[in-house]
Picture (spheres, rainbow, N blue to C red):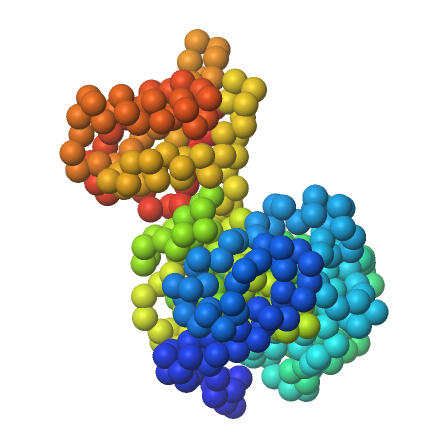
Length: 407
């Protein structure tokens, strides 16, 4: 049994970067054929974007913007030049956000994740992600079939009928949420049904805490996690090293400071931004609203691509204070006005039955004058008054949290 899906996974990281960025100018040209990208990237010479530094100068497109953009210019907000009929399947996610599936093999890039989780050609897989309107079921279905697996398109729910399928087809693999896997196992134990053929799983779409991991493992199933979205498919996946997640091939993943388009310092927590290299349906710096941090060095499994810690929360920490929205972008603006500061965190509380906020700011040179200057910036940017607390450099946790609502 081979350890890796193909040689791309183990190539030297410099070679990978060179190959990705040699393709990026052509992808940018394809993207700019769509009116929304043409407007956002007006004046850009695609041939000049051949490095991470150059890519970081392009604007991010936040996923939170997509519902309004898709409503204004259906179906794809003007970000896809290709006609809907050129795709294989057409989906929608809440928002609405409209998502097309390409016609190529493994359009959601998921075969690698399944392979890393131990799935192999000829395996039978019980796929319990939903097949109704949203792409989840088809993401894992197409990925498993690209790997050469046979798929039971079960979807979620209806455990009794699923038991019949499991006992008849004896699937070795499961794909779905970790929550539904537990439901299935519990219901089988309670009703005396045999689901013992399932030996491995690729789970996504919900938290998979250590307690549940231990329970699933104790039941004889080796389960791995994957991180993906309905827009991009599988972005990163767990391997046998069990040390974070390896970023998928054919993607450029950046981590930026929440509320900005600026890459974080190495190891800091920030928002995931992805650029995909499918010229038929490219994404250019799509900010997902999910937090993570990069891990140093390659994985012990031999895969050499960037590693991330996995999902670490949401970057969109917008909250309402005294009836007004306060956004991470505003805290980032205060940081730009005072570049000598380190991390910033706005803490929102309740005092005497009214909203109150305190901006905690890291600095190596605290003073009353600096505190007053920051307080003036806080009021100017947010239109709200608040206290300022100066703390020592490194005092605030590296968790990507810019606004902490403690009410």
